[in-house]
Image (tube, rainbow over all chains, first blue to last red; front, side, top):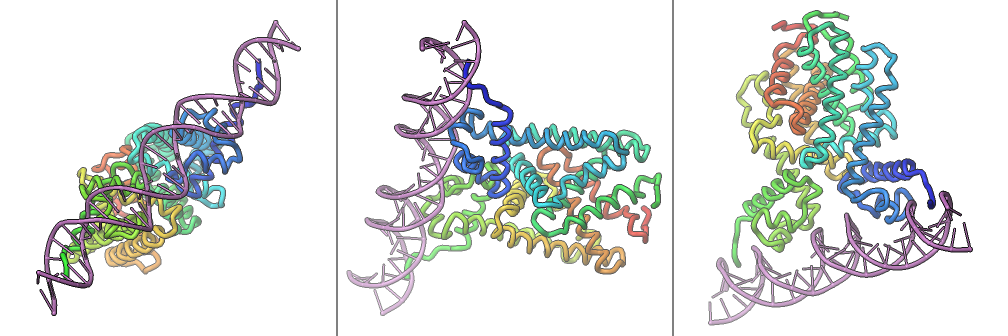
Length: 196
Length: 196
DNA sequence: GCGTTTGCAATATAACCGTATTGTAACAGG
DNA sequence: CCTGTTACAATACGGTTATATTGCAAACGC
């Protein structure tokens, strides 16, 4: 019938603009006007592709998760140790571009505390990440599932905390990565002790 | 001359209401009207005691830091190990009241990423906490300052990450505390190995 | 070419925002 | 008692917000 455009691309453009705005002014600073300006499109267009501001914000989170998942899947061929390290290190911002992505991620994480819709989506992603991580730990150290899960939780929490400190500029990204690498490679607390 | 009231108490009441609002709706949901309603006072009163919304929000952060500092000072007589553990564990929300405080703290932490005024105030508090922590680690393990500082950063980051996961309800608070305790007591990576 | 459906842009609307302004009740000091 | 100052409360104002509504141009099937 009429005028066919690439919906997927339109949505992607808008969500990219959304991320820009979040990275600059936080989720608090997200308004349709601001996003429209960043995307250089009209408000009408955004309204056409997203039912509401809330729906847009949620779509932004879902795409962020999907993108991180794809980046992880791309490491499918690597050794467990490398994949584990990748998961832990990926979020530590090294470039300005990486910093934007992580800033957006933490903006969502923070609002998840008070917004239960966002928490649902985010919690599921966290759980998936933890399971992946645990599998690698199990493969790497040959411990049972319970121990691997606990170790995975610890590693991920450490990675989150380090990332947070890098974000508020209280920690150098390279230091954070060094700590994580040491944690993955030189671990002796599992009583099977690889002892570097 | 006229009508003397307790300024300190008035301000405290308003800031408490501010925290309530932040804990419920995030910093995004903070408006003078909302805070006024939570405090059961008029908007005029808030305006009388705080120059602007921004000043109120900042005062909320400063009071939060001061309160945490006081709680820490109250442990002055305890052993280094206990004080260290206190710093790490204090923020893990165990009660509903504690949860409110930590929620507010993380709301500020998240906006610090994009708001540089808040980052300044917050970064200084983080640095102070790290220094305290490092001193205890040094006393506890007898390592040099550089190593103690690195260990302190690691412990604090771990605590932050665990707390974050408790907040989004992906981790049980008791599990988080167990991990932290094990980290403080059963640490063997420092090559002085206390070996539990 | 024609009608229909899509893809928007433009505009209207109603709510809410921070802040400035104005008015007033209370009270301490002379 | 009176005067001056404080501590507000009430309200007005200009701006921004999300969203609903309206209208129109483009383009495909026929």
